[in-house]
Image (cartoon, rainbow, N blue to C red; front, side, top):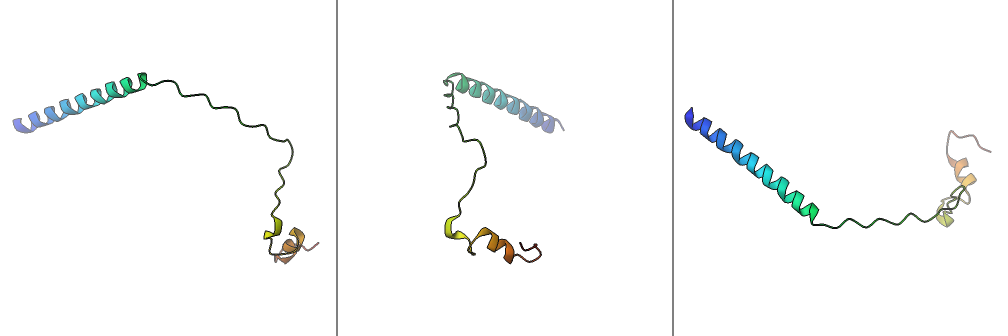
Length: 76
């Protein structure tokens, strides 16, 4: 039992010393760096709706034509 207690104590001491070393290392690394540059503000956007032009990618002649092909929707 004494050997197990000694191994447990050594393991705890080693874990605490590794944690302290990691904390000191990270602190020194952070202090040695310069502050990150401030990002520029985003470009201004036009107010209003953002309309998307899908060009010729529709499988129908128009959006309304595609909507009329979907079953269950009222046809206009």
